[in-house]
Image (cartoon, rainbow, N blue to C red):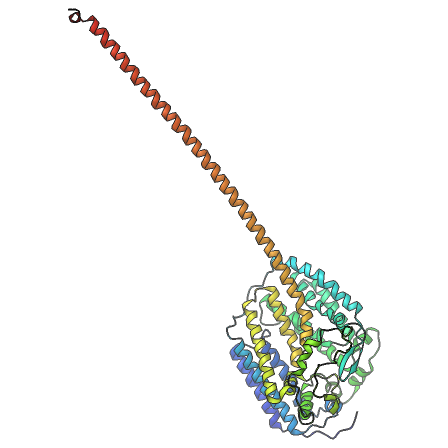
Length: 506
């Protein structure tokens, strides 16, 4: 690594102002009720504090310069200040856009623990039977081999679809815990997945964000604001593993084999504590300084948003398109031409700055904050629907990848993480529809039976009435016959009296 001169220092005031803006935004969010883990704006504030407040503080006061030497950069004070100003303006803009876009959101309902209905339970098992084997196949068949070409990792082993398909196991494993109501044995598949990801070494964010997602789902299901006690116990262990994997991606595999990782041993035995903590992790401020130094001063151009065209070329397998562009299909420059930016991420701020300077950055974070605000408002209106709620919680957990990487990387990750939930919702809706149709048919049969029963009863009543009327008529005829007989008898008696009267014989 080349030896560079010490970087030009910033002033203490720059750091103080950076913290003041973050604290001011935090107070605003507390006033607006946004300081919860369910708010993407709160997630971004936490990200900003770590990479754009704590990190520059360490760079300024404790001379953290490993990343600058790694990138072969000797930054100027003006560029370091520009990076601070960009990040603070981005924070204010994103939170403001989120606040406006989330207007009309329903209040989150806390209290009684949620319950899943039978349709959702049945549909989950069908969904798990589809995506569980697919994810396991990806774990077995994936060969994450490749090479770096122009700063982009190009796979030469298996297809990217096969490698990324294992991400479907994240929603499957966490939904399993949810469906079985947090019983201890329901965590076993999730722990096996975390063990596999740590053993792989690469993709550390997958198990970090998966653990964060698990906490979010627990909070939603139990209607709580404060994370459970076990999450606080697990946090230091996860942080320690993350730090060790930052020094050596194969640390966990070596530890299981009873071997000592050389890089980890050097970091732990060094007398300079900066060797342990001054790493590429959480160094997005340093990366932003690199971008602010060279774009557009040395590149003579911006990207004008062309990096997002990769959304249309990325899904096409390279086996079907031999001449598929590496990275974005349209390139205006390569950051590696001015130093070493291999494997580094620009953050959403740096990605916006590359698109068009100040205007590009403001438009990028405004769009991101607006989309996240709309998503949060949609979540609050559907917070009782398990599939829709979990879809938002996945977005809220994985959105850190957007903040860290910028660009399109989050879309690839979200695709495999959200598809199982969409299938779960579709199957559940079909089960519910079948149940409703069955209920309607049963109600129709009951209505027909009741109608027929009523018609039969009416017919029986009518017959009985006719019979009664007939009997009454017979009685009337009988009475009339008796009257006429009495009259005849009276007439015969009268005639007999007339015959016996002597006056009638004169």
